[in-house]
Length: 191
Image (cartoon, rainbow, N blue to C red):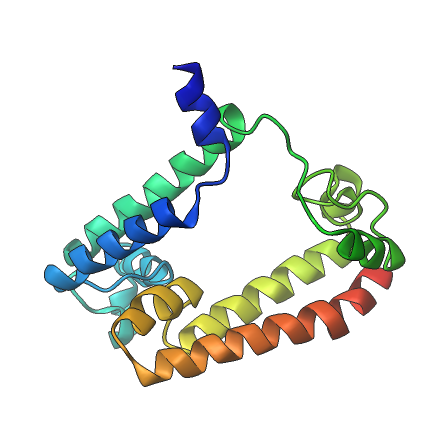
């Protein structure tokens, strides 16, 4: 049992996780389903009666219960993983990344997944952090809707279905991530 727990606590190699993702995608394709996390927001809005406000939310939400269960599993799995299967919260990052993060004001990079300088109890409720969180949430929500899907939907489901627009979206996600990381985030943290 100890060996199993030790195995689960380590990052899984590609030859286990890759085929599992492929199995999920083939199963979804077989049953005529599409994978995407952001679809759940639309489903929840429909369940809460938003179709009275907009025709966009008018659809049979019961067809998406499997996707809501998936999100529930993600939340439960994340909790179990963080509480019981994570022996150490340190993040293995390169020395160059540590140096870059220290340069922009992160004093202890790699000691946890969430830097205290951004997500600490003293900082999270500041006006600056609330503006960043609300602004970031708005941009993610707007971008997801504008791109007609989120990163998981386009990168996993869309690319496996050979959808041209998913390829464009994934390239845009990567370019946006690089621009944010190297050109915008250092200035936001320095504020």
